[in-house]
Length: 136
Length: 136
DNA sequence: CGCAATCGGAACGAATCAGTCCGATTGGAG
DNA sequence: CTCCAATCGGACTGATTCGTTCCGATTGCG
Image (cartoon, rainbow over all chains, first blue to last red; front, side, top):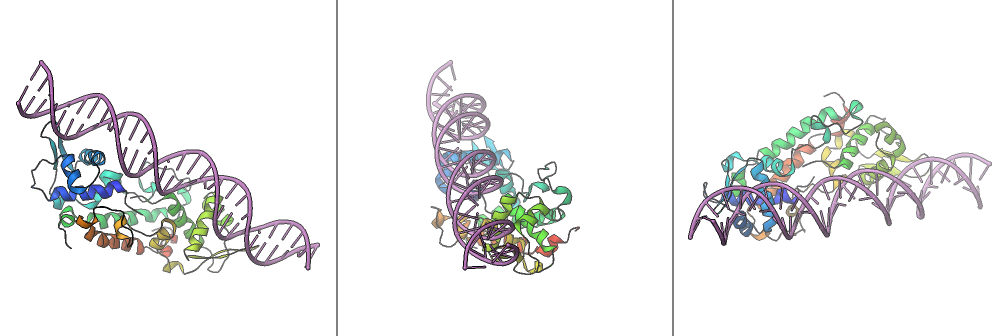
């Protein structure tokens, strides 16, 4: 029940990005220096966040990343899903995945979706704007 | 943001145990057969749950495990913590742990405890009695 | 047209996790 | 009282995933 380091770093980096002017081009190098995250790791993360649609990427000299949406529109759940994949407590909540051999007689399976939604709601209620707010 | 397989199994096994009479002695072998969890893994889990205080263990012939509390008194959070350790999204929420080198200037750190509590609350709201209920 | 800067994907190493096995302890039978 | 069977408890091994690092592809500027 712990967040991966990558997801943790992603939150910190996006929070730092949210403090810059909305349309500013942030390079991975800049954010790495501001946050203290190792540069190669920062590059990997930014790429993954861009692939998820949270950032728009621009290549070449003077390129960089820009937040695709406003800080209030991005939630913790979005960031976590972008880095770690879909939020699914168990494998049986992802439709199409049936690794569990007990599913036909599993009494707890019907309850997982509700728990999963509750957890996702808790993370979805926290916006990037709140996190970037600092004291609080 | 996924539960470990061990924690998943633990929930299934405790749910199965909750369906038995309150004071019945359940051996790891019995529960393993009922749930389909591999026996050695089941043994490891039961031991860990007993160490956490959710079960009381009795050794020797005719021994086994008994729920230390009523099914309504055991929550998902308890089970997860017993198997995976304390629920801490990031390392900086565990007091005494200071692996993060940025903590002094981290703007998101003040917000983690609230998020952590929200998440723990979501898991704490689901009791073992609910999970054992079956259809729901 | 050449160069510098930046993003994107691929390869390596480490840590954790899942699974398995064997020893320690307890209760009952002879 | 002694021996045996049954069960819990901890230690070891293999595999998967995570985290990090490095190198190539692409773009804009001089």
